[in-house]
Length: 288
Image 1 (cartoon, rainbow, N blue to C red):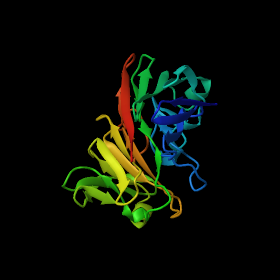
Image 2 (cartoon, helix red, strand yellow; image 1 turned 135 degrees about the vertical axis):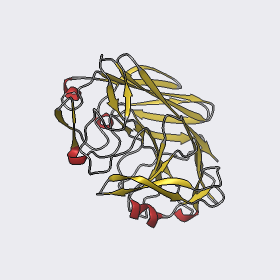
Image 3 (cartoon, rainbow, N blue to C red; image 1 turned 90 degrees about the vertical axis):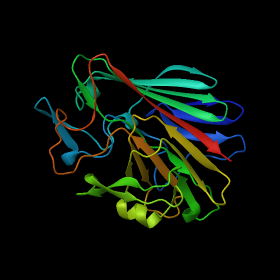
Image 4 (cartoon, helix red, strand yellow; image 1 turned 60 degrees about the vertical axis):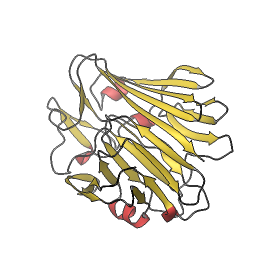
């Protein structure tokens, strides 16, 4: 089921399936969220893993489990906890189905609310169990590039001069732990579709937490702000040039090297002790 929150600046539609934002419509009629056949997603939530696991599985406490790419939250039905004209909160809690693939008593809450021309987002991960809960979290929004400008005229403004650090993929969808320089032009990365396709995903570590996607000519763009507990910034799009969108994805963790067995007892990832919680904050500010 879909719910709409709105004010005089924005109309936002959220689907209870995956607690996914499927539309951010400006008051001038411009749609800021991608919708199309090349990629059927809009802004999925990634939990309790980001990306793929070696062999599509892992062990914890010596027991083997299977886990789909990006976890199960994006394909789960969330419960609406409250909804008003300009705010909605949805949640997903552990169930028999989730415990079969992820043996932890969790609660994931997604809160979306509008402040003037800004969509504010707060995702809360809670450990309702007693032991330590390992997990990753990420948001995967796809932003519409409009229909006019050449994609190569769009750029991400990171607002810093020096090169950032980027991790390449290896062994398929897995991450090389060694980083390389990610050069910028006056603080900008101009979109290079071939580079994105060849690398599949550009994974940048410790990027600034305030970036803007815009072009030299297109009057619509987005500013994305996110909290410092999301140290990885991923750039992706489907390898279809006519698909005019770009995914900007702040993640708390990334796939492992594709060589080391996936043991959640020792793997580098976020962890919450019993009763603890962590909030991941984002804000989308349309630019026009």
